[in-house]
Image 1 (cartoon, rainbow, N blue to C red):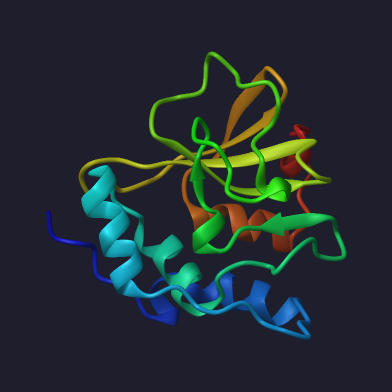
Image 2: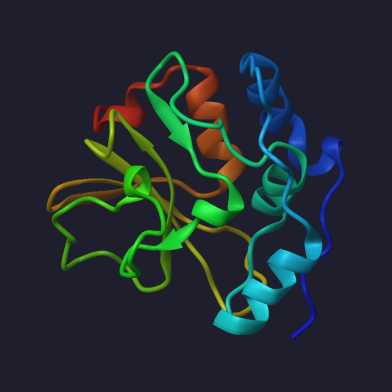
Length: 164
């Protein structure tokens, strides 16, 4: 499997770099490497979409909860919703929904896992990677790409909280 090429800021990172500019870190997280993501892809057989690759190699998480109580995970905290979490504060919701689509990975949460945000990964390049919002047993589609999700965050959209 050939890893996807990382897109440049104009192609994939516009909203991502706006989000980065909104965060004010004392200690920015270490950036993920292409090698780490390629290893993940080889191990899982799933591809990380270009916009999310750009996030991990250019920003790599919010380094904890931001002022709006969102925590965007670094690459080392990115996990399948079914795997045990390596860090206590990155535990997926206590209740796993039975209707979660296959190959979903938790990449962020709101208010200490009151709400989790998941991305669906695929074994082949796709035009979109759906983003789901989950609170307890309730889960629904909220965006079709990581960039679209980040844009919703920048607009403080009500979609981030199960409101349309």
